Amino acid sequence: MNNNVVGWILDAHLCSAQLEMVVWVATEQNSVVSFREPWHPVLHVSGRQDHLRNLVDWLWLPEIRLRYGLRAYAFEMKRPELGSHDTERMLAITLESCATLRSLAEHIDARGEHVRFTLYSVDVRPEQQYLTSKRLTIGSFVRFQDNQLVLLEENRQRREWRCCRIEVVLQQLGHGATSCRQPSEIRVAQCDTLGKVIGDESVFAFNQVGQIRGLEQWFQEVDPDLVLSIRGNTEAFPHLMSYLEARRLSLCLGRNKTPLRQIGRTRILSSYGQVLRSDPQFPLEGRIHIDLSSSFMFREGGLDGLYELACVSATRISDAARKSPGSVISAIQYRVAMEDGVLVPWKKTRPEDTKSAWDLLQSDRGGLYLDSRPGVYANVIELDYASLFPSIIATRNISPETLNCSCCQPAQNCVP
Image (cartoon, rainbow, N blue to C red; front, side):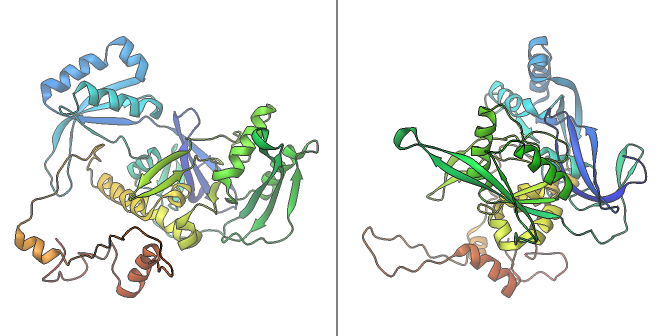
């Protein structure tokens, strides 16, 4: 990038080696360019000073230092809590990459017998840490200057999105125990920000030679910013990856020519009595990939809503599409804390503040719990609380950012 590049931050992510942060900027000249900067995560540890010194001696053993890729350490004064300006002397450990951050945190926690050390900056996404440390976010208007991105105060209108829709058609092969599904063709077309097809659809059949290269050429010519897939994370891309790996083929749909790859794996988890499935990600580096079938946030708020959430939380648009409303609120809290110089704890051990009976009486407005009796019922009515919450925001102006806000006079019976 040269010093004449001016544009908006479209996306940010770690490179495949997890050693550099890659920032994609949509320029005023209608192109998208990338900016790379070395990024080394920092893990903070608090505890008794003698325990921290013993921890440093153990970490800097040659075999431990090499195993976790430790670069340096320092003792810094940091704020561990919101609402307090008191600082604490902590150990800051710099690593080569994020690949070993979690395993190092687990070993330090175990070495402290889960009570001697408190760890910080473990669960925060590296993209959010990077953008917040630069006082940037998704959508920031920036200029490339002196090998770094500089935020510009002026606010210019962002260019229009270039969007496409992709669908992988699967066919059933075999019968019984030997049956399997594999892709037969891929359909792509330009679309609007809601996924409605605009213009003609292009079909690339897998039984014809050169169709994979033809699909890559289509992406290079159209150069979409946003890729909307039909069951992309749940079915399409997993089967497509298996098909390509079995034939030792690669498919490059991103802007940096990196082959399609999978991040994470399918996880089954339980939440509030419901069994949920979390699918892996298939990033198209330099482009924003959203699975239309599994993104609640996109269905409720569209691309404009996702863009706004990404801006206020300093997270990727593709990550915001996969989050729940509660996770987005947590990301916003992380950003505010980091901008205020407060570290984010890894495992929250601080108990809730003790309240008097009068405080509980003033704040607790009561609740209704319905415990249904086992049996067979007809004409059952379901309350959709997911749709009720946006309605409350729209009609009552009640949301996390409006409760106890600084712009209004506090009420006598405000929520503690």
